[in-house]
Length: 437
Image (cartoon, rainbow, N blue to C red; front, side):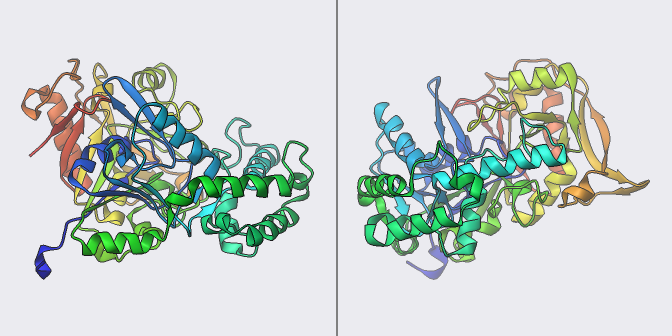
């Protein structure tokens, strides 16, 4: 292969607070790639794909699993709830979906019952002590143990990696140490299994997963050398990135494209095309500032039309107008080459459609995003009004057949976003995506 003929690899990144419909786009692009790679997060993320009116929900397994013969790779940057992973595998296989291509990094860290208990304890404590809503908790996590698992990864002493599941003699003292270092409330939780019981179950799971466990960094480089195309699938989204999102109301990993090299063990040069996915409006789950949030009947209408309930938790999502300040920031941060806007059909019948193109803070106007929750709380959205459309567009399959006001909305967003919109979603099914030249 000549130097200039390297296989082109792609990343799909959420540009808002998650739930943008990345799974559908990964599913679409998977046909053009040989392997789909999940590089961050854990079972707190969720992708839903609709195939022939069948909704398939995934949490840890990359969306490319729906294509037999393609590798679905869970890389080292993921924290793996291996119990949940087994459930996902069983669920897919019960639907006659081939999972033979699924592999798991031996260096991915393991989420244990201690992590989940610690996550729930901290959220409840924060909600009680700092007056946050009890149903969202202090940060608004999914209580799936993701943050504590990443914290243990950084602490190192009691961290458990997938490879440890295959080494019982090393695993048992690690679990015992994890139990010893856990908070007293967690250690005394009567609902938690004992350290020995947890160890025995992890050993059992390790044996079930043994054929899938490998060094995925070498695997990815082997695939690249063989001329294969990789598709990197982001979990969560840019505004939840632990370094670049609305901190502290963020996830615990680098969920932007910046997390790919470390989370997958590949060079930044491996990523040739970066597609960003955004909704035609905004949603957010859990706590944190949300400048364009709307309330009342309109929010309820959008939520119900868009089925805006969390894939992982079922929680109703908060609803807001499209925030172009945040979108431009995400496009800039990720180096986005092209955008897919999903859920355009949900806005049908809403007139006017509002978008935010600047913030006002203490009487001053800015077009720069504030990736800090305390600063963003004071931002007031500067909204402009765009004409809405009333037509049902779920059956539209070409840009020319969209109503003129829907086309105008896409053009306006593209003009202000910093990257071209090349795909638009008009419904949840695989076929309900319009290509825009």
